[in-house]
Image 1 (cartoon, rainbow, N blue to C red):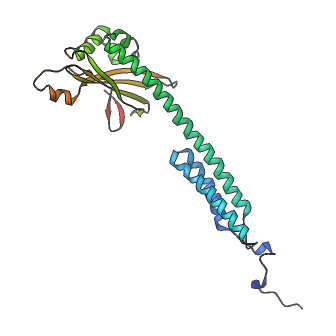
Image 2 (cartoon, helix red, strand yellow):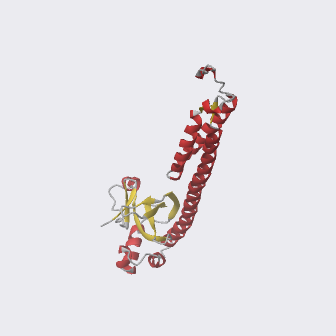
Image 3 (cartoon, one colour):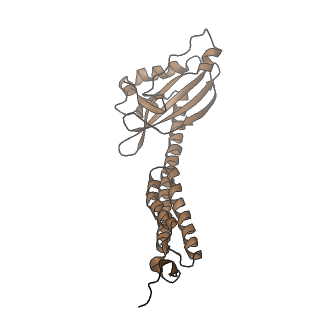
Amino acid sequence: MAEPVSSDQFDRATDPEYAAVCPMAVLAVIVGVLGATAFLVAPLVAVPVVAIVLGLAAHRKIRKSQGVLVGRKLALAGIVLGIATAALGGGYHLSIYLGEQRTLEDLKTQASEMIDDILAGRYKNVFEKLPHDSVQRKVGVERFGKAMSDLFEGGGNLVQRNLRSLQILPTERGGLVAPAEMCVRLDRRTLQITLWFRQEEDGRWQFAGVGGHETFESIAKHAGQDGPAPLPAPYQRGHGHGHHHH
């Protein structure tokens, strides 16, 4: 009877049954599956990229092992999963970013046209664009126009106007608002006018209201002089979110 062959005498290069699965290939598949998290936030697109790197490294290691390691299909699966989730996740975040940029450009144009109407005293045009549920609309066009003109009264002629900031912010109620902060320099006063836009349920953006006040620097410069009464806005800034006035 032939003597049994001890396990260490097996040639693993010719007997795949005793070849070891490359741990890196297994890890590549696991990370490739986790690559689906790339859809959550943009930085997680790095996860499928790691899967691709692990898969390629595992494939190279298996090839160099001359049969000692197996798992090429696993390594390939990790690479394919990584490429797919990186491409889809990256494309998803890119489309959101580009859509947001288009929205901001559109709102920038609307804000520019709106401030032109305000500076020209065309308050009725601004009033007509207010939504029907707006508190500012409920006061009526005359009171709205008076509040707007009071803000500019005694300020003199326009020296300069520029958009300071425009960003999309979440509200406490789960919606989105976009405040466009405009700095308006007059001969004798500097005002901050904030034009508010909100996203409707159908995805469209609508002008929601306007707020304004004299800047702190301008108040300090004209100490002792009575400045204009602030124009309350339908929203206010705070803690990085847009909040409703109640």
